[in-house]
Length: 240
Ligand SMILES: Nc1ncnc2c1ncn2[C@@H]1O[C@H](COP(=O)(O)OP(=O)(O)OP(=O)(O)O)[C@@H](O)[C@H]1O
Image 1 (spheres, rainbow, N blue to C red):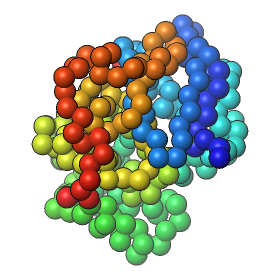
Image 2 (cartoon, rainbow, N blue to C red):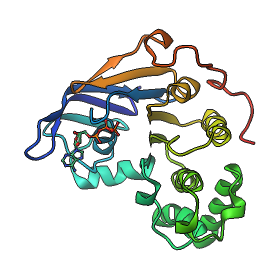
Image 3 (cartoon, protein in one colour):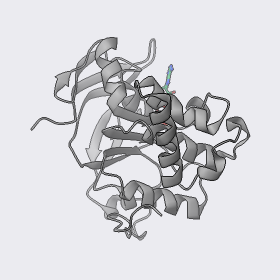
Image 4 (cartoon, rainbow, N blue to C red):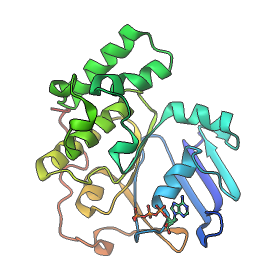
């Protein structure tokens, strides 16, 4: 069976800048949950943007859903099946209200207004955000914005979730709620996070991105917070 994603020998540099990624390889399979950490500026967000075609590598191959992806039309199809959560919710939320923001993706995928509204209700309920439905998006708190951003991604029912620093700005109980939500999802997951506890809770395999390459991490011994719990890694409960 082919990988959901297979990146081979990816090389990337921003114009006039030193190399960010150098011959980077990565695979993501059905049901896999991968975390990437690494120093600031090492290229983690860049990698996620490359995977959905918001940037193009100078060389190397990006395979997604069994097909090579090179052109904008290829990546348009990838973006319909891959949900990317940006590190800054203000980059994700651009509609006047929460309900409109969550409906945007399903409508864009060709759902009817009724289907999109049903998806809005389901997704907000699943994330315990129904009370925010009519709120003006830019008046939300930063934690609320982050969860609503996740709702906009989940409402598209993506096959793969790419989450860039999803715990930024979340308080402890909201972070625990996010862990429970992610643990209950069936999708393959690639999380970029500096939060070691979160990475352990939601992923099975971890890498450190450094010097343009992904280095497998052996486990908690390599972690910055080795004694933190892994309790929610396979959370048995449905989303509250
Ligand atoms: N649009 C851009 N133009 C030029 N350089 C950029 C651009 N975006 C990012 N960079 C640079 O590319 C490098 C990688 O950035 P990136 O945001 O991918 O790092 P990161 O690992 O996600 O960092 P952090 O942990 O701080 O979020 C950094 O040196 C950054 O300054």
